[in-house]
Length: 143
Image (cartoon, rainbow, N blue to C red; front, side, top):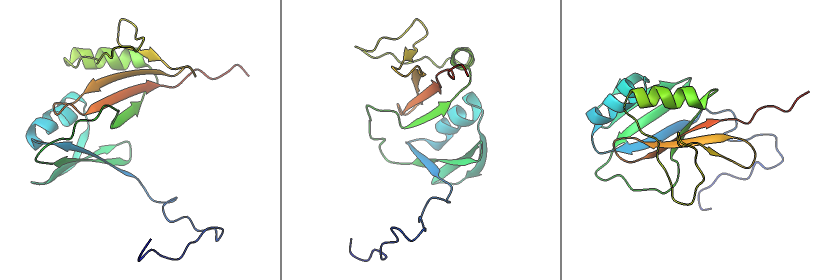
């Protein structure tokens, strides 16, 4: 790659292995997005500007960035790992956030799909139709 630094492969230096990740999601309306991410989901806003709202999500920074048009995606753009997916779905339902259903995906009455490995997953959308998810990891095998 032109201008890229010399390879550090095998040198014991990984350029991003110690860096914190920042997650991004687009919105056409920062105030509407804040009503959802801050109000409905309960995330603490750490920054607000004409360009983005930033939230702290258990130590990870989520930047909800203002864009002219949100590009539709058929896949999850942001997800949360939860201990109890039923409780998380109930809490979102109490805030009028419906779970999304997909044709051809075997989901239970609450919208949960059980993956082959045992993880339980449900999807919902933000006001810009960004696809978000909840994942409850599979139970640990008996020891």
